[in-house]
Length: 477
Image 1 (cartoon, rainbow, N blue to C red):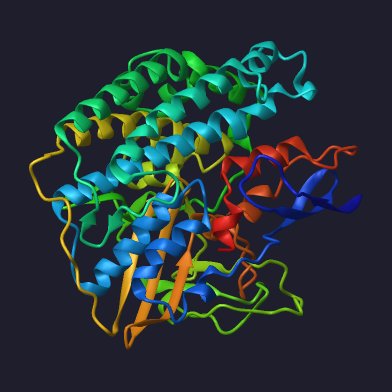
Image 2 (spheres, rainbow, N blue to C red; image 1 turned 180 degrees about the vertical axis):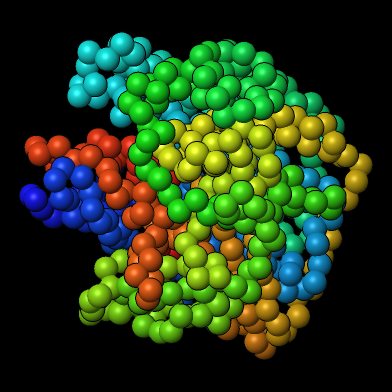
């Protein structure tokens, strides 16, 4: 048996810093260790602050999912106060949040993931010339179309939130700006234009035709637009045979509205759906460069171990739900929501093709939701009310960022933040091992990946890592 150790990273085309140590035996990964090498410490920054400062500080964790952080912070403060957003304020919030998630999925597909298929290593494949024309970084026609469409739809966030990223519009009582009738017309027109882009370029057919596919076979057999090109490539490269995660999916439920969450909340495992019990979450610190004990995030602390002592190997903590690692993201959301094609994918196991297919499915479904939400805006209604915060108490804010389950937990004493903990999607997906030796989802998914003798940054490893769409700056917040 030939063995070697390989350090892969820092990765390009991921948000933030990431490196992964691989143990390779006979040309395949036998063990993987994911390291988030940059500590940022936002949780420590929050201590002693006015609770409302969370709405200003935590969105700065990330410049591509800042609305997710803002929505989670606002929800935690609302829970602290025992108060929900006004219905129209909640509607405006989910519109902004949905657009941000939609843009993240589109960016990941065109700029982060599919660019790998344009590499010279794939020259000679029947699809390679088309992949080069569509997905080459900066020059690909799909890349340019994506960037233009993304810039256009983000104007809706500007109308509702004043700016993107880091809007301050989302508050515990609603949103700070009530849209006018003219704004609603402009938003509807922008969404109509974005639909044309999706139907002509990404899907090559009406959105409903893709969103309403009933089986995994029909979804993965799609042959139109750039989605069809990806499915062709995925079949040829057998992307459904690599990157198997734990098969346990977590969703906090996306887009909370008075009538319920647009995508369901729950945990899916072994074909069964169960409710999310957030009291069963623990943050394991055994392999993180952190001092402290394993605890629920409401009791957690962030004290970095500056000596970086073994056996720790990452600044990322290891969140576990009832002792289990959980995969989260668009595929998890669609599985938990019960979409039949997503359930079919889950039955075959989480893998590289399934994660990307889940995002494509969610793009179509989210666009349709956005059109209905904008039509339901009532410019004559109230969009915000004042929500006094108690001097002491605690709150939990649960939302779904593009990459998955995001939670904020805050405690307040004498009008000041006494504790603040955040578990981001990539903290779940890229967690290190826990005290029981259980690897995080990406670490488990990398086992078995093929590594060529001359490869120092294996393509298969890159496909697996990018299929999770890591956001490392959120991980090490």
